[in-house]
Image (cartoon, rainbow, N blue to C red; front, top):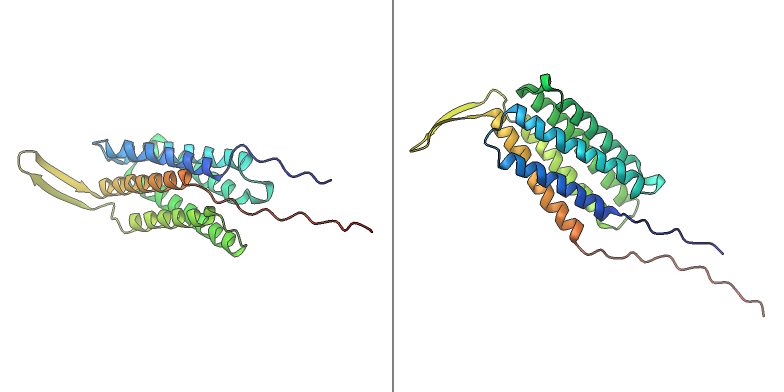
Length: 211
């Protein structure tokens, strides 16, 4: 008699919630920081990317079967490399923030989109391909938005009673990353807490009884 594989203790829901948690932490740190410099932006991004990489690496072992680990392993590697690059103190300058975050966003976003498209073509009807597609698109949008944000941009303005301020390209870029993290956190949290449809399991073959 063939025995069915035991269910895993962790599933895609846990991966989504873990990613949502780290994205929410990054969004809160950017939102409530008055300093949107490259140093702060890369510090927050480094923690976010390294925590996300660890989440992907653990999910490859705890969540996905052996034949479905390529995507999360690739995402773990990309996030780990970006996070380690952002953690180098001497690299925490404006140009490095744009270069590291843009490269991470374009590569990881493309991986998620292509993986989601492949899963859909393979006939997987779960919510994971749809969620991966949307997150991948959001990540690509972040990369595109940063590409069109000039690091040299600078605009001085004054608020009556508060003083004079300067809006720079790095302030906009760090704010874009914080906004991206907030949207991803909300979306993945909703996806993680949403009820799941159970996929029908294939019926066991019936045996003919000899008369």
